[in-house]
Length: 198
Length: 198
DNA sequence: GCAGTTTCCTAACGATCGTTAGTAAACTAT
DNA sequence: ATAGTTTACTAACGATCGTTAGGAAACTGC
Image 1: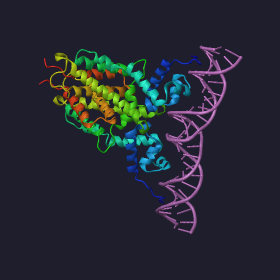
Image 2: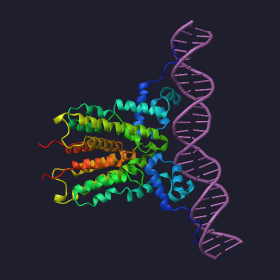
Image 3: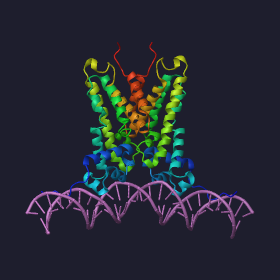
Image 4: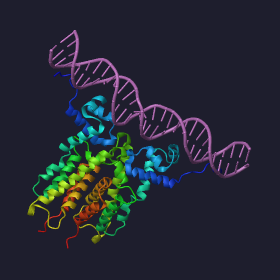
């Protein structure tokens, strides 16, 4: 089983560079020439290794969601509904204003301003975000007794409100709003999170 | 003073068509060919009448903010802080899920996924959104006594929270989330709006 | 040495991007 | 009619878009 010419790039590092570029500029705002420059590869090598632009984008999104974009996971591991909300908001703030990463959220960044030609990408991303709402609502419902929401609260509505706030945070982070301002938003949101009357 | 050949288009209607196109596809997602088709004009006529793409975009934004995008104005006219918040959220929901208009917000739609080449457009839109936060905060501070916020509340934080929620609403509306789901988000937000203890 | 295999890159593909000469057409005033 | 003025349109500009032939280069096994 012969070996052939060895690769001159690191696939992990190349995919990471592609992810960072999409994260900064969004799907449509990123040109193949931007990607080849960032990845340090020629265009034919990119196509051979990762497929066309949309396929590469989906791989970059998967990597994002398994890494810096996985701020939902930490929240789901919390033991009370309130801790879930607080953790979700604050880890989102940190994630969208990271010192070593682009500001904003790759998913939100690529979801808007979409040309009809890229409709399949938009649908893909919308699905991911709606999945998030569902997962969050299910988890809010799952807490037993005192760990859960106070009686009368609507888990779906609260889940969607949380996701809405996080998307707004992502918009502002991408526009340059300071991390501290966004922390204040998260705190303000938690000030009015529903609690049991004591 | 001679007249010359008469115009064969209505400048008002043409600018309106351009606004709707940018609203749907964002600044970068809209090609000049999309605009000429929607406006019913040839490219040279568009350039003669409105200038280049960025100039036309700014005129479209001005028109948007004076018309369907002016949901802040109604809120500022309210007589209490709580009514302001409620009106802002609900008129935003209606505006971003209009039956006769594209879904989403033109400003948010064009603010993300921006190629470095269009940086000037991004700065312009960010400025508009930060202006909104400031205006909202000032108005929240301006209500006298019982009409205003309860003691201990931070007008700036609440203003930014409101804008954050509205931006999240715009993201979801553009992605196809139903109007009723967004109304629920607005209601849920108002359920936890700070009130005086009674 | 010589196949066989895999990756490399230069160069180009057709399509579309935003933009603009250059000219024909339609009006008013003399 | 004719000159003057304004608008409309065809056709093209150079640049960039995403994508791909086609062939040289670098490895393994014989």
